[in-house]
Length: 389
Ligand SMILES: [Zn+2]
Ligand SMILES: [Zn+2]
Image (cartoon, rainbow, N blue to C red; front, side, top):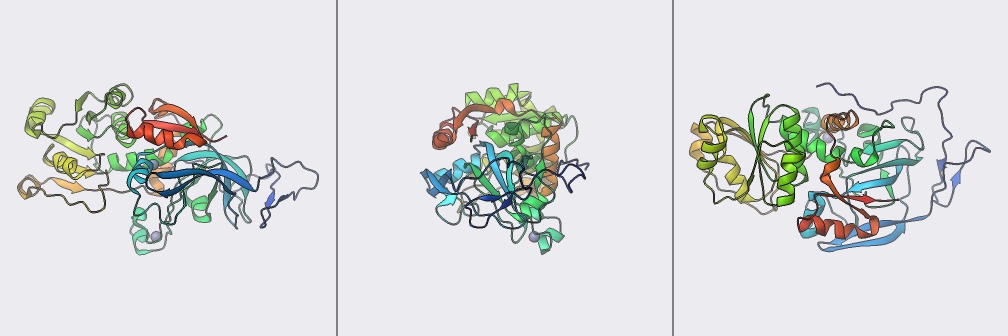
């Protein structure tokens, strides 16, 4: 896989910009370049969304996070609402949110406002996108290239805020400088696109193959679009008129059907796949046990199913063993992304291979982030761009 990112690995000689150092007391910046004016001074406090409990997210004034060596402080420009944040808002999250109140939001892009000691790859003023995680690189799972399962995969939250502190590991391994022509609201799609690309590419389909995508939320939409860019023929299944239209107009799905698990899978296969044999690949991007079971029944003999939508933590699924075994249906359930896919997503976005702008159906200021999540919940928004300015 060819990956061209924009992470700056070292400062170009002669291009050094004045770098303010961060005062550990957070009271002011020390200008290390004498009379050179600072890009801007950092305030002591900021506005940020704080997650207290399901259904209880507050916009509060909190301290700008203190910064340590190797870290980046990013002035957020645009954060995006995400289906995962909506799930968190409704029912909490066993992995993402642990200490309460917690910073909230994990998709976004902005400008570097300050750099920690020892940072040479970024400069104040750089436009950047940071992933919401980075693997350690040394544990058992990282050595097996299963970095999304890293034993110490710390997940970063806090893009619904004026400033985001990017920890050293993410700043070093999973943060990219953006070219001037890439709008920050487009770059903010890097995280969900990394998930979508990983979900689609794991199926190992080829141009002309058929793919069923269940779910037309943001991840489903990006999966549909990524698959059609790769030449795969997509039938999408959704429940909302707005999203189903988007699956066709934006995603390029050849057919969009109502997601109704009472409709016999055999009738769908008969009507929408060559010789009625079933889909070469099936992606589940809903996250309920019922749709997991239904997804499997749409695959052809020897086909592959990826349950990408995470179900509630205590779920169980009952599946018929006969087709799994005698029809050799391959089953997988992928979670999250890896640095390689985050880099690939940045490449697709910065080279214009995908323009996800149509998925932003609304813009709201930071103080109305809950309204944005509720708009996603009631189906009137796909993604809401939270403008943090
Ligand atoms: Zn997300
Ligand atoms: Zn690891």
